[in-house]
Length: 101
Image (tube, rainbow, N blue to C red; front, top):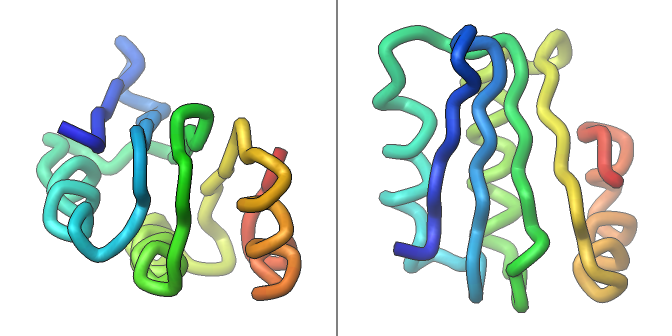
């Protein structure tokens, strides 16, 4: 599976790791990974360490996650971006919506 999720023991932080291409093919797995938790975590981390490609549908999925997490009040972090992915986020102004590192 290209999307894996890890919830901390205290159920406060959910990490979603994407391996390979982050595109529409992962849509259902990505949503399922955060919507099927017993309770809503306080913090979401999207780990792109092993992500090789991000397209516009992935940007849409991240926006859906942000809305699910609470919109402007949400704590959604995108971590371990490579230079190409970081450039896509900057061009799309996602650096204004997400904590990206």
